[in-house]
Image 1 (cartoon, rainbow, N blue to C red):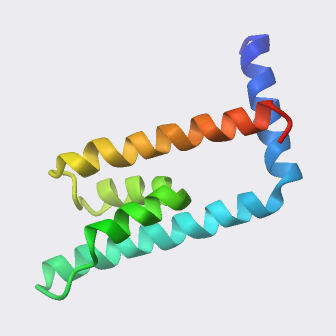
Image 2: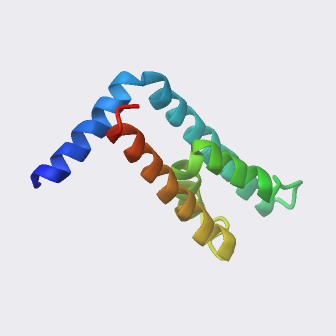
Image 3: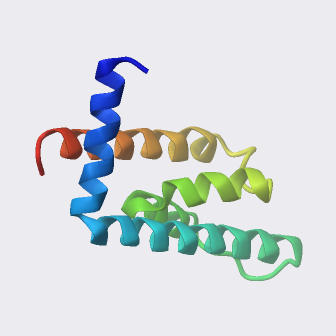
Length: 107
């Protein structure tokens, strides 16, 4: 690991130490998003009322993109939908950039 990588990682870790609430929020929202994707898959299999696509995307947008992405591939849910296979990873990428920016600007 070079000096630049270590600096980014250290700032990222320090950010979550200083902002424990953000860390806890991200854990909770990702668990909720994972569960909601799982419930939607269960409902799809059993021909029950489905969760709206907009709800799945909103949960991902407000911080649950890791949970959504994990659920997509663990449950094999929405993996054939281009808007999900591109959209959820793109949301995650943007969120990581925002967190790195926040961590490295002293926020």
